[in-house]
Length: 325
Image (cartoon, rainbow, N blue to C red):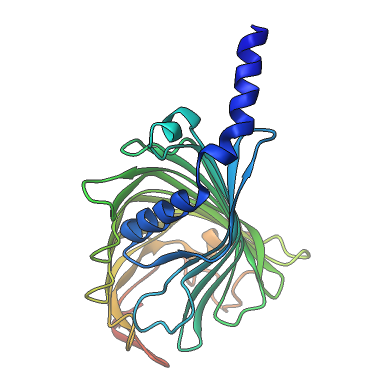
């Protein structure tokens, strides 16, 4: 046993001299570029750490942005820690027992609009070519000039499909922690779905979407609206289209259903669709949600309410057609 331990310690100490980090760096760049369809570069150094477990630390990682989004990288990563499987590495195979990514900055901005992802941390389970990978992510997101940062956590099982750029996240879960929206109103929610994507063609299909949400009013208010939603979302970046079908939102007796289509998403975004509110006792629903009553002379008003319309969204314009209330 002592001899075996001595041999193991000696092997660990010799790793930095037997295996060239430069070769691994080039392989990571090659695989990352092939998987994403965008150039992955590593400007920093690769260094070995032996304790508490052998691993590689990589700094200065950048992933190029898509055409039309400016010269800034899509993603910049301060530091990534990789824990390779030593026997596979000695045999010339690049497999990992886990990956941890910290200090990620995502540039999802176009023409001054978009999302800023801050403080993103990603950790994985074992990374073996051809096998599913467990992912855990946490981040803070700020968007469209808003001062509020939204804390988000997510978990998924990643499976590579037939080509390097095709993938499947199933199951995918996302949790948005409680955060202030405006005027003391707080929002939170979680989502579960199945995401199938193709980075090469820019096609992403989100199926089996089930979302739960909650909206809480100011501290002095009893307002609390909770509900669930289901939908199917089909995004095609090459065609610049987005289709939302099978949308149904439920909050107690309030039921909203509809669908929508978006066009020219990256150049001149616009959308249209259908929305309907099924008949309900609006007064009773508002009481259950802790909302203040509507001041109407007739107490029976709005005890039967419904609405449906076709809608359209254009830059600085909202259109309602065929509105029936």
